[in-house]
Length: 291
Length: 296
Ligand SMILES: Nc1ncnc2c1ncn2[C@@H]1O[C@H](COP(=O)(O)OP(=O)(O)OP(=O)(O)O)[C@@H](O)[C@H]1O
Ligand SMILES: [Mg+2]
Image (tube, rainbow over all chains, first blue to last red; front, top):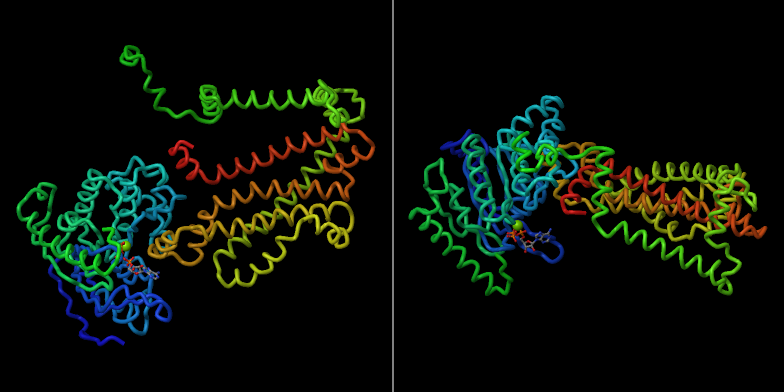
């Protein structure tokens, strides 16, 4: 069992946001297949994410970022350590697998809107199955929320009929209608062209400014990380640990003009140096670097 | 209106998507701009031509006994058939009707049992562990090997035939449904979990629709297999039906009637699988639309 470095729960910081959605990751270790091959994906990783913070995770490919997200979301169990959400234990030594729930909404790398439901039914699905709204109320609210996100016209279309950018935005609408404490995103904009990406960024920032939901965002794109984040956490090569934290003290609301500012450049360089070092280490460790 | 008249493009028409019959007509008109209908026509002519030349034209040895297309077609549409069976005689109607009824019952039974079974097997690991080995041992047994057992087990003509057709299509449907559930991307289950689904929600909103494409592929194959085993069963033990008609005509050297039954089988089989395809498209609009955008 890993040594518990921090056992004192309850040092909640309430600097921004809604006062909810603070994640405390304490000495988390994840070993895949403990009896067999033993891949250590995350090693003794600790991180405090404040309520309402946009925390960007970057790191070399295959270092264990997705693993960490999956542990928080309750898709994988952890091996050692514990994770708290607003001082409530999500998973720990006695309960290695967190319950999946609507308080942590995941937006998946390849998109996971149900292709057999219209955008509207996708968005209305959460409130209906949780039983918090009647069917017609949920559909009304879903329609409003989609319209708010500029998707009113395509609300009745199937995900396969709209562009990937629209589908991704609809997926975020589907997540937010449940009023989650945390939004977990795993490289949601990876396969998009630069223009679509920048539209996605603006729409995510707009959503954030409105809801102040805590965001845990994995990416390979350092400019994206600095542009969106309050803090950029650079991970080491596998097993993942925190290597460096870049604080992004750029006031919000932000817009694309920021991209050409000196302050922005400096921060990107700072993060780049850290990532580059890790990439070289990964390379020297004989791993294929794809990032 | 004037704007449109000047530009020569009626945008109001271009925008409205054609519906129903108009849509079918639109599709048909469009298809004449592609080589497909011409190739189809050419293919049929080529096939019929070869058939004609072999049998009635050149009377190639070994083919001369086979009734040629002209003979078959005249007989088929004759009010006073030489061999006693045509499109207008009652025994033909009975044979077609009996075969179709058997297929309908067998297919309905196989689908009604196979789809739920496959869904549960894909959904519950434990249930699969119980049932899969049995299914996998029974499945490779050729359907003809079941014939004697079916006759011993069931009395009469009807039940053993339906049993055989059901059995064959049941295996196909179950296996395809199972594969369908297993093909569903893990992220949909995760998304459903995140969104607060209970188990039964996951079943109805992820497992069932997610497996649908595979289920319908399976049903297409299963209706074909049902016809196959139906005809085999009818040929061996039957009183009516197209398979029986083939065997019966063969026994009394009515080769024209035999070929007529074969052609009818092809035609009816084609219609039934078109109906399954149509049903599938109706139930999976999401897929039809997504595929249409990819130009398929
Ligand atoms: N289910 C699993 N079983 C065994 N090993 C796994 C499993 N999932 C991931 N791994 C391994 O754990 C390591 C970390 O994987 P993970 O997907 O978390 O990386 P990542 O940082 O998200 O990478 P990328 O940037 O490519 O998405 C990898 O070496 C991977 O091979
Ligand atoms: Mg990943």
